[in-house]
Length: 97
Image (tube, rainbow, N blue to C red; front, side, top):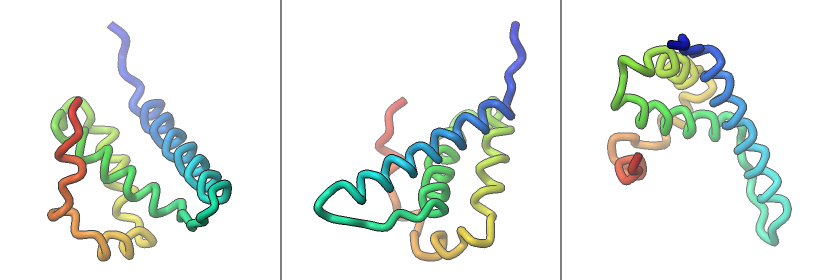
């Protein structure tokens, strides 16, 4: 059986989040409405979403969860954490996988 490469998985997820940021930024400049999307806000929201979903299988995703916890503890992301009350958000409860 092949051994998992959690570093590769973390890098792939990080690259996917970066790609999402670029797509959102481009969509904001192409439409008739413009909006500013901060890379750190997208990273924080994505990290929280992945962490919430992957927490259901903590033992299997231990390395990836540690990576996202590190991102969420970044000092620059604390401002977003203080604005959003994660305990009241039910968005991720509705995801079926």
